[in-house]
Length: 167
Image 1 (cartoon, one colour):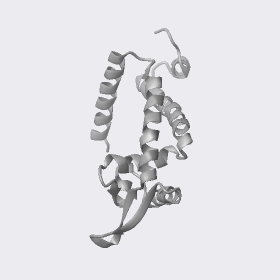
Image 2: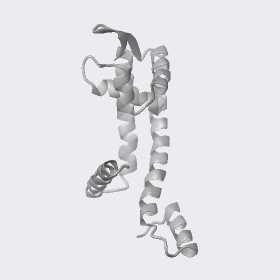
Image 3: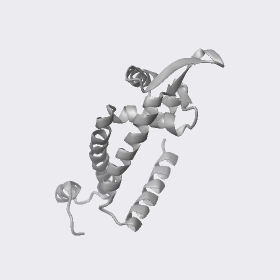
Image 4: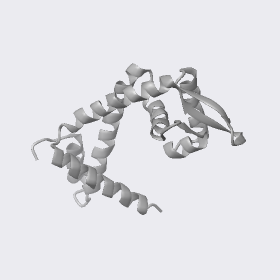
């Protein structure tokens, strides 16, 4: 190992005061948490020129990925994004005011709504996704292609493993 990071310092401090502790998990998750925070900040900067934040991008991107006609119910959006209905309503309000989506009655259920990307929303999300991917690709350039692929595979296994072992 040629580079040290703040997690190394934390692990070394624990080793000095509690040498019996196995800090292997701390080494992994400490780095995941710090990387998540760093990349979250980078993504906010990537999306800012388009007038949206990360949470708003997530809504627009979910509608975009749903395919034509880029329409989902607020409930489907909430479930996909793991948001409360209150949190979703706030995001939808901001995006609707910005003209990036519209809410309309569901033609199949008068009690329900549909959320649809507008042309402006489609344009914004298509440009923002490119900017976000560029920021992620730049960060990932610290690894070569094989390392990046191995990391993706390992993280997938870890994610699946943690989802299968929740109490």
